[in-house]
Length: 70
Image 1 (cartoon, helix red, strand yellow):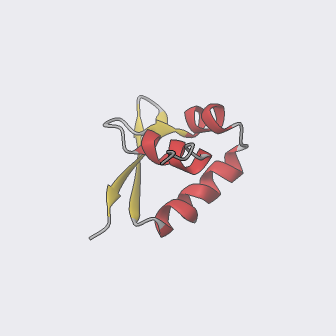
Image 2: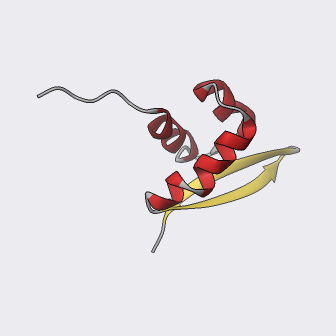
């Protein structure tokens, strides 16, 4: 059995599950997407995966984190 390659959405999910989450700039760099595409993925596809996405400003940079929805 072959493991499938990680998609860009998989990478975004992994990034926002980190303790400190990820900024839009970090997610743009990882995917090659523009900021509106990253925000769309957060609001659409990743929420459909069952993630509750929270954001907060840390040292002047907005960071996004994910938790499982209950």
